[in-house]
Length: 295
Image (tube, rainbow, N blue to C red; front, top):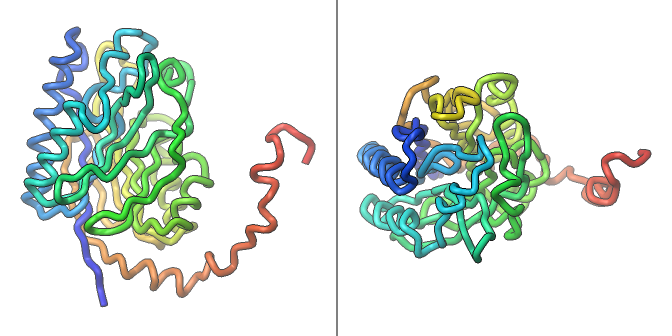
């Protein structure tokens, strides 16, 4: 018996990244996403995931204390409340990555998960925080996530999330598979260069190794004033065999919605039996050895 749901991915450029007033930037990006989420609803999306730090520019392209003010409390902040109202309106699950503040001076790169009735299901905090010249100064802003790798039992399936840099590490993706994830979203902000070659390979590999669907989301455009690279979009959905089910365009705003059959997970796993053949008792070196020790 099939279990078909419609997965939606939204990739978008930021209209006011050069604006000085942070609230003006946020309001413009939220207004834009309201329209895009409405489009996803009209297309019948059941689950929608937005790009990394979707309600503004990728400001970690610089180290500037002013961006601390972009953070919000969860779930009482402006963005989460808006996503809750939209999820309820369209009866869809929404994954929305934003900047979270917990205490004064404590910030996380976080994704909120809203269920189809508008209720707040929980959040995932990005675990692997990059610090790379010249365009990713995230350690200046964020603490590493401390909530583990939760799987959220939504109205339309079991959802896991890994944010951008997390996707380069195989362990989180496997943990989500072992915890029962059927769909894993990877909201990202990735610019042209070496990552464009890896963009399709990595997440399709995660889908194959773990036997679930993956939704990969990327930003679009060149953001002022940094101009550190061009976000190329090309968001896509991969099935558990690594086949691309649907793919958004390059360098364009787009609402991508496509049906997937979650029963394909069992079909694939019954063929490959990767979970049956795992040998976790042999994997101790993954956590017990320092990467620069003699091995």
